[in-house]
Length: 246
Image (cartoon, rainbow, N blue to C red; front, side, top):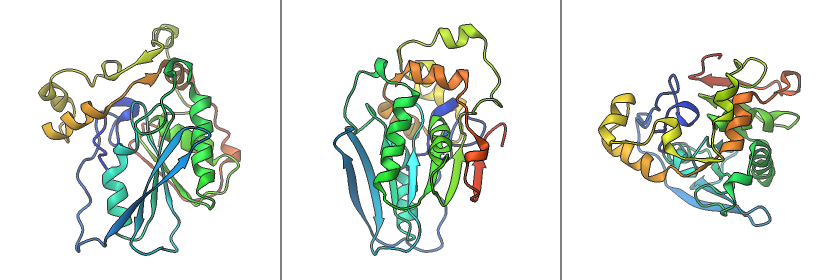
């Protein structure tokens, strides 16, 4: 994929200021893969699927992107793991990338959560849920009371009550719709690259090209704190990468 993502909730790893863009080094060439899709017409959702050449007994990987993102964020991950026997399914939240457009100002965290649950249930079997940024918070909520095989959170948004309470004006000033400027990903390529030294100029250019628009309501809810019931989370292997409160 292009885990080369914007800082904050759209960063893929590290301290939230940038993401690992280097594909894991392989000792051998990966096997061929085939691409597929899952379309949830009733919700206008598109799930991008990368599958091994032959069906595997391994559990599927279910990817949830963060703010302004889409399935494009996971492309290198999808390819890498499909070549090694894991099928991967990357959801596009409503009004993101290939999913159906919608009035973004009318969307919120609860809408995204419904999308994430619908995509998970479409797999029709337990999966490893992988979430990044805002998608990490969605992954935690998906895991509440559902059968999953493992949970992987990459620079996840922090849930309440462990999330520090932001000043009221920080939440209030988030506009109804925002784009790359709010997360410091607008501006000249070299300037953004200096803030994210693990990315190349080409990486920065691609990310800026693909970043979309985002729901201010969802961000305000995330900043204010979304409650996650730890007692409802399944007792499964969990990996947290690049979070301040791992």
